[in-house]
Amino acid sequence: MYANRFRRLLRKYHTKRATPEERRLVDDWYNSFDDSPRLTHTQRKILRNELHTNIQKQLFLHEDPIVRKLRWSPFRKLIAASILLCTTGMIAWLFIVRNGEKLPSEKREWVEVAAAAGRLKKVTLPDSTEVWLNTDTKIGFFKPFEHGETREVTLLEGEAFFSVSPDKTKPFIVHAQGIETRVLGTSFTVHAYKELDELRVSVSTGMVQVRRVDGYSLGTLSRGEEVVYNKVEGTNFTREADPEVRSAWTSGTTYLSEASFAELALAFRHTYGLHLKAHNAAIFHQRYSIQLDRHTRYDDFVKALCAIHKNRYRKEENAIIIY
Image (cartoon, rainbow, N blue to C red; front, top):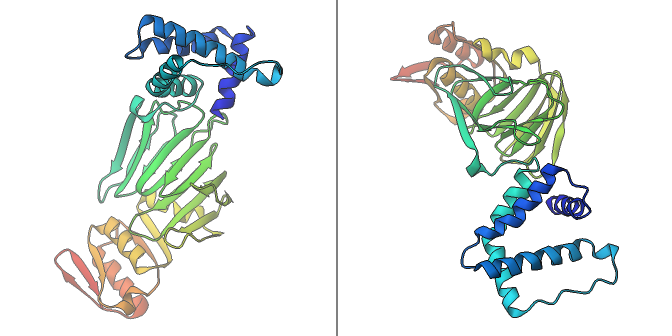
């Protein structure tokens, strides 16, 4: 893609159809060779003229069948090899960055925002998108945030609810453990805790596109739908999900439906700051449908939890053992 844009830009430059900004871009590229080490002024001038001529011939080869291949002397080949190694990075920066692509990471500021254990946190991104972070959640993004053709955030850990500020010219993308969720302006939840095998994307309003980083599509979701992706097995399925239930944790209530013990224990820790443990494998493989509320005492919740499967419990320091 970049080679094609480069070719089109040079063709416009040499046919005098380039804009002033495009001409400055090309001039900067030619001038960049002046910073190359170990070359004399004469060597730089020879190489610059040589490259200028050779680029024109190569770019316009299909337009002029009579063009002959340029023959370089060993001296010129040596200079060209040296300059190629020294300026590859600068060429990429000039023709990718200044044409609207993303800046290299070292040229941008990486920002991370986290919600501490037992706390929820609301974040407003530079584009006015609002993000709720569940406890033990961390996101990261580059600033300037809206540089290039997209707005991108990485969910490094945890669960986040995104209310995306609409901008049809710059899609909003959330990266989370091998999954990309792309939207234009909508609200959705990404549930991606490292302790859990499954990752979920649930839509509250609008539509989202979900895919793996290798391009494999996991589906296009509308309000009331969610995709569940198993990170270990690489499988996925789509199901209905109540939007209000999926985002209720932003107000302190978590609903679990046929949840595994691992997911239950994670939600319990986030709500009460205590560890929930299964005494044996049979309990660990039980499923739970229950509501956790920050305003409910933990012991009242545990009693209700044990009543589901007629289990019992005991407290050991900061852990609740179910047996």
